[in-house]
Image 1: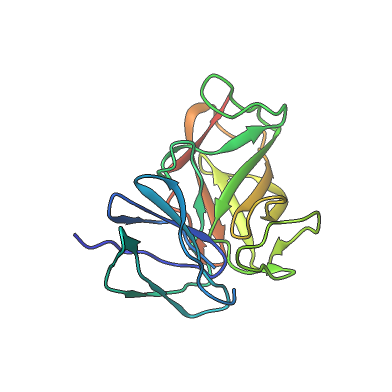
Image 2: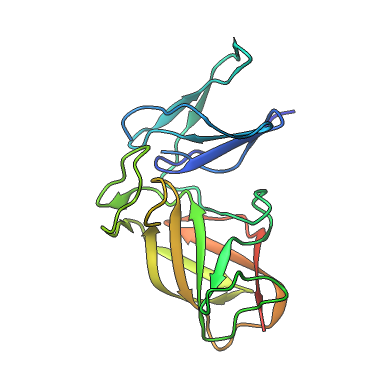
Length: 202
């Protein structure tokens, strides 16, 4: 089975069950994977690169290495089930998690978390934790919800999270359709997310 992975300098990646999951990575040198659960490892790779080398060690045995190209962006929205599909890891304006039992109101603000947005200004540093200094994306971004454009309040590094985890604060259009699983598509530069993450809107 062949897995295609597009890495972005400055994002985080996961590997699960022997398959590489889409979730970009990124500055100065590659970082070791962080154990999260017995079947998953999360990687924060180096930014400012055109390619990265991935190698996995399990029970003292190293896999063969593979070279992965780095894209300028490879946006992917985090989801509650960690698969990249289904309900997005998102908070409504009132602080509740967005899901079918707690949908967002049209015209309200929603906060989503994503990765693969490329470089920020100021630039991110691999492995560092975000501070109160806001780091905004350097590329143009746009987002649609159910095919209707939303407006941005902020797009950049998520404060207090490791660099590579990004935050998107959007305001829903009054014309946003209602639905329990509206696809969210995030575009950074010329590259769009898969559209498999969803939000609920009443």
